[in-house]
Length: 392
Image (cartoon, rainbow, N blue to C red; front, side):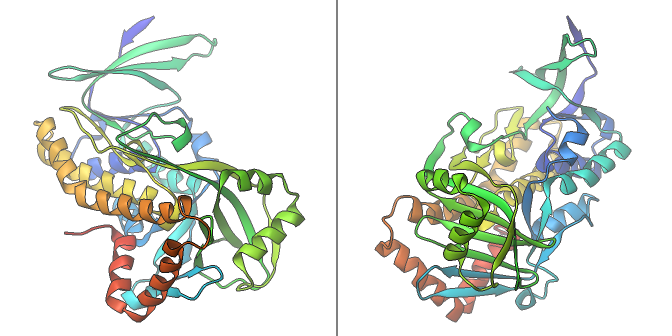
């Protein structure tokens, strides 16, 4: 059965943080809420139960505040200690150096989207979930979506939806995506868990570069969110260990800066890669993970997506009557920030993904960390980019 449902000016496929932030910012920019539609495969309850840890930069916190979704439950990062395991060289980036309350925040995915969903419900934005957008057809004067939903009887209902502009904001993970223009399998796997130490340093994050990749510990609640990037064969071994043996391996890789590891949650893992392509047709554009999926080094993935949302909201509100011009302006405004952020994370990831252990490239990274601590302008330039992205 096929029926036609109400049209909208802007349809957003994907109700993650980037998609929902875009909808809220569009309303603030003067687009009528009733003319904005969001589609997502999860229910609101399922999204709010997602316990993944997300790193938000200070700039992203400002975007969420502008969208009316801050404060939310989050742990502040006041300084970041960056080092190279077993080698000279480290740097310390501190919020006080920039007269900021925090460099960033760590929050659970569900806690980020919960206030967004509340704000959207109050705003009157059309919400369609759970459903799947199975086809997108672009015409001269509109875009037609084919949307499939389940019914109470278990049968499926297919509906068609017409919009002036469609925004792809549902990217998925690297292993689930089709190949884009910039694509690289780093042959690394991220192991994720929540860990606790007996001498934790409040509000300090750690980025420790090992021979196989970065090991990040982000302060969260009573402990730390762990992101440990290793080669796939090593990841298989680590995931097979019992808790005591895994704790010993992690302690050896990180060191004694926060004393002894006392507790580790259930571990999960996923493959890492780069998959990016900045593109827009006359009426369809991609943002967030749908435009760029990055390695987690430096934690810039969601932050880049939220900056996409902020700029796209401004471009569409200025020129919605001329969607192609608005989308091309969006690509131009986002080009430098996207290119620099993708280039930085890709370079750091490849140093470990493609270099032998202890290689010259890895050693030079350690020396550069020491240099950053001595040369304040370089450290400030990198920190500014992590905080806000590229600002012309």
